Image (cartoon, rainbow, N blue to C red; front, top):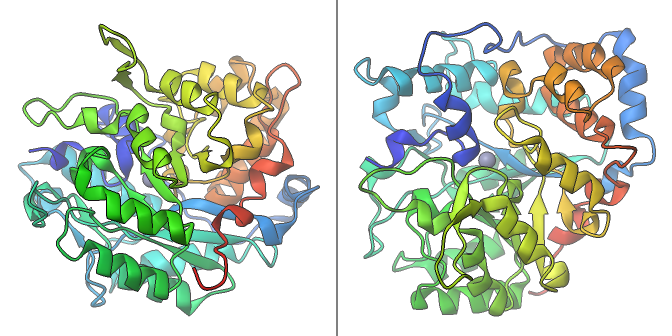
Length: 407
Ligand SMILES: [Zn+2]
């Protein structure tokens, strides 16, 4: 029951697709143009001014697949069933965003191919961190297919990264309740994973569970960061797991010395303020802000993927743009393939909110049609609030994911 109501890609997307239960609206489909017209080159050049491409790692990139290449990837069957029309639409929009034609001989291959083609428009050195995505597990650590919206095995993410190591690194995903979780973590470390990804509410992970302690110890000693999706938009009746996405729960990992990246800076939805005697719901982002001010230093990071999406409050972007003191701990990420959905980011609305120059709207729109990854980066470079902008440090993410030799 839980995951069919979630989307293919984090709670971020769940919010977006809440709006899609009605008829398909214009602006959902990526036109999937190729190549970069000369007219857009000045915008692209400005985007990279002052950035060192070798430090530019996109810390949030999804791999998806149906398993048709033997990848082991799965997408929940409900996303193909006409009696689940919202789920079907989600899948269609996501596959369309990734420019996978309905008659593609292999969804797995077409997805990876498109991603590689988009990456080629970037300067040498820029890289993407490709996410594996583990299955949901029950409390006993047994995988639960019915609760798993999509699954991307570690081995597949590692293989796609190894095929183009100049462009890709990979991020493991291991449910910590699994009986062999530690062995899987060691295997991921040996295979060069640069981080670990969890989506606690969807995967059923309680960050406070005592069983996680040995796992935390290993993450801390290896200095492997865990990217945790926090914040959620809507309650899932009966499942009661949205509480697991409460940003304050990452303290359990931080206290064990684990480096944590909070995905999307917890910019969506509400969570209980557990620090109050009588907890009440507050924006999850407010709890992220509290953690950022608690003195965890470099141990606590936030990725800025999708924070400019239409389903975020402008307050989020204004805070991130003006908190210069946070910015060395904010990390560029795209949440690909979400930037490929034109309706996800409404540029005129951002201009009206004072977050973007009116002159930037049309060039950015054109750039999105040709290369949504370049668009996503350019948008973040152009975003402003009363003169404040994101510092170059936000785009120099690589040092956060380099492990000491032998760790
Ligand atoms: Zn994501």
